[in-house]
Amino acid sequence: MTTTRGLRDRTEPITVLTAYYALTARIIDPAGIDIILVGDSMGTEVLGYEDTLPVTLEEMTHRTAAVVRGTDEALVVADMPFLSVGVDESETIRNAGRMLKKAGADAVKLESGPHTVEITDRLTQLGIPVMAHLGLTPQHVNQLGGYSRQGTTTEAAEEILSLARAHEDAGAFGLVLEHVPSNVAARITEAIDIPTIGIGAGSDCDGQVLVSTDVMGLSESQPPFADQFGDVEAAMTDAVDAFREAVESGEFPAAEHGHVEERVDLE
View 1 (tube, helix red, strand yellow):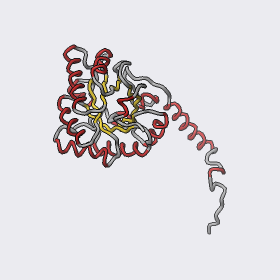
View 2 (view 1 turned 30 degrees about the vertical axis):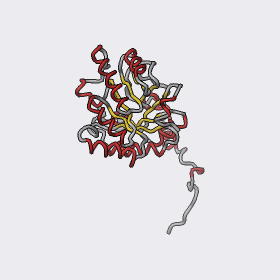
View 3 (view 1 turned 180 degrees about the vertical axis):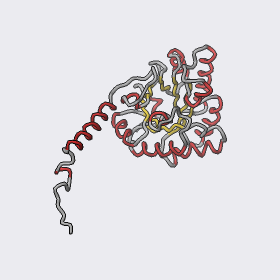
View 4 (view 1 turned 135 degrees about the horizontal axis):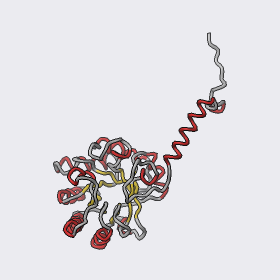
């Protein structure tokens, strides 16, 4: 079973995929994926929102619990949704603790910045493992003005590096680096001892994460740094079409589908 402590000792690249259902987790987990991230990306990928901001703590708790029920070996990390951390310390602790105590997650992930250093320190003191997330942080889309690459100037790159070190010192067990120049990600990976997980950050990170709907070919669109490794949508479409055709033609249901040929006398 993957553990937060064991990730530091890994020599092979760490693999991470998102999941939002028990069904998806039951596919991802036996494949040997190290970490299943219950991402607030569920907002855009399965809930129909334009961004991640509307995702609620209740939705994250419910979906995380479902993923946990479908997972045996992978480390399950739950995203903390917009405004669930940082507003008030006691509320932050309760919200993050809920993901472990009620939903059964192994750890939480925080979209990080200067405001989450002390939060990370406090949560880890209380036994709540924290994965930090720097670079492009989608919950800041309105502040950033979109989903553009981050760390593209020396000053911005140095700030990300400084925050990476600060979150490591605060007790984070890992760090997601999203949509930053590959040389910046490589420098940060070299500078800190906790594993880095890249997404749009080049190949020098200790691991890689992608959104599962991108990987499986279920996304309406995907970012330029993602890739499609299958076409599940086509398979699902074929299955639905075949069902409709079978019903319309009278081929389904047949006798072997149960009770079709049984007769009951009615007055």
